[in-house]
Length: 228
Image (cartoon, rainbow, N blue to C red; front, side, top):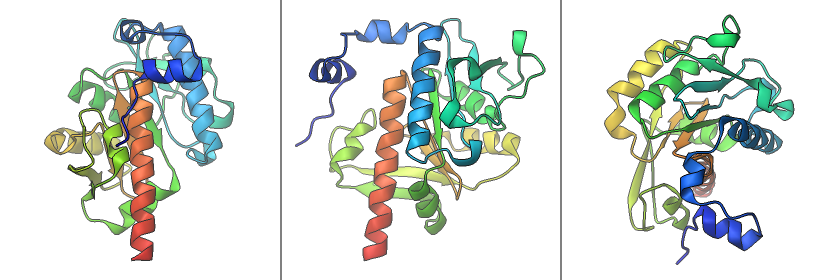
């Protein structure tokens, strides 16, 4: 049975410098900007952020929220393309007056609902969009080894439910939907119908693992449905 490896184990396997979990949680905002910008460009190369779409954020050591600017070509995204926002999603400090991502309030809601979160990722990849167009209010999966990529999942035998929320241009209303359905959000992810995915974690590594786990499961389930 496949064991989900920790970041420490993966770094040892592939020859990366050793980084303990304590240091990961205390990563400086400047370093996190660099690594998150690299992740954003990588996901763009996979086709997950076409036409300047998607948005990303992190919380720094002081608890300030940094979110990606609006309308940035994600293939060119750099570490200076993040701006600070208030808990209400308004640009703040030296960035006051600049336009943050249109979905910034979703990020603010996730940080409030799940206070341990430090990084939030968003994807517009094809398979989650397709699978969400065919299902009612949740994606149900069971039996996949990869589902152990979700923090807290330890066996493929579990049945996992990922909620699907209807897409809307009223982001304030959508944020309220998240608060009303917190009990359904159990695996650090959700789907927006015909829109994409959100995933988050206590570190960038964990957030990436959650997003990529969901992406893989959506692709598998779409292929199963098409071939059944």
